[in-house]
Image (cartoon, rainbow over all chains, first blue to last red; front, side):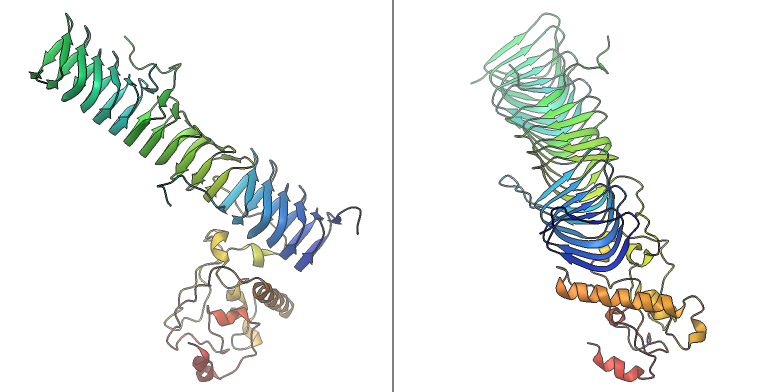
Length: 114
Length: 104
Length: 250
């Protein structure tokens, strides 16, 4: 078991399908797809052009792609995200740049439906 | 005590219904149906049929009023329309044009 | 006598037991504790209380939603959905804040946002252009390219990385592939294959929109049908079996 998460360094570019069962921190570039059963963090230098399927996602950098998280997605103030997000919890901080669709289950009061 | 206040720069085109007091300082066009009191303040302009318990008018109302308790037209109040209410009070200085029906 | 106070100290309050149906516009803050159905247009802020329900398209400077909004919100300054807020509709605002616990479903548009640049990765980044049946046998499948960018949202159901380029290359002879080197082509074929593999692992929830099968005309020389699902597979070596490939198609 790694003591610290796996880090993809700033000067590394990965193209392809990436899967993992531990936390992953991206400071470099990923293109392709990422499937992770843990927490993916895209740091401010990170650029991810990939479809993501993760448990938790924290974006401090750039992400473009379809995002599916089983737990939460957090887009912080420096982040830039283009793509659709489906997750039970989504946090967008003031200053974040985001374009795309958000799909969460929204419990509407009785009588309303959309 | 009013819980709903329509501010002076607000224009509502539609229906307002409710079970609490309403204060109109802006403009309402359409219809007002309340269980409680309507207060049209000086700046208020109402072009609507009104159905409520009490109406107090210090502004302008164009439309018919059916009140369960009372209609009061204050000094600055101007009204064009019919009033049907068991009690009516028209203050000195108010202007009013319309029919009055106090039959209850 | 200034009736219309621009700096009105009190906001307009729609009380908890009040229901407004219609259009509302104004130059002051609006605080909704009750319900509004219709359209709201304000030069200031809309605040929706936890008990507030707004079923309306909203145009405001700022919106702070702690209640329910069903409708599109266009804000010139900011949309803030708090922990108890629930919004179904599109958001158009330069700033959007979604607090942990908020519920939201819809599109978010913040103004001009281009896709982040990834060197050499345009195959993934470039949004897919809609590919209707390239009827009348037009040899060039690709439409005027990445200039038109549909949102990446649409890329999910579409075939993977720009197959249009893939199709272009094997056409006829290698001589025509002046634009692409074999190496690039190979890389892209690989990417396409991986995308397929990924999709097989995780099939998209929506079925891809298959363009209607063009009636036999769009088979270019390579035997590839431009713009159909078959372009997901790595390009086959050019064959003359135009007719045979038709049979496969449903």
